[in-house]
Length: 88
Image (cartoon, rainbow, N blue to C red; front, side, top):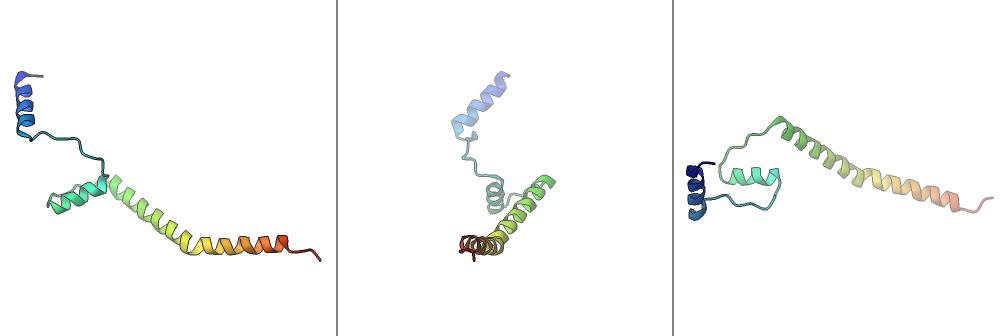
């Protein structure tokens, strides 16, 4: 490191312009903050695929909760009733 670099860093720190560690918020919170400040975002293919995967996971979980779970519960309860019923 050069002495000029060190002086520059000290000036930034003294003036309050130095970057401070922020609470990790996730990439989507960062993009939302950029939108509020009119800062453009560069969306990469991997983020696009991650977003698609998250939407797909949410859709599957929603379908399971609304449709598959009630039907599976009804099936299991029916099988238990049949299994626990007295034999003739």
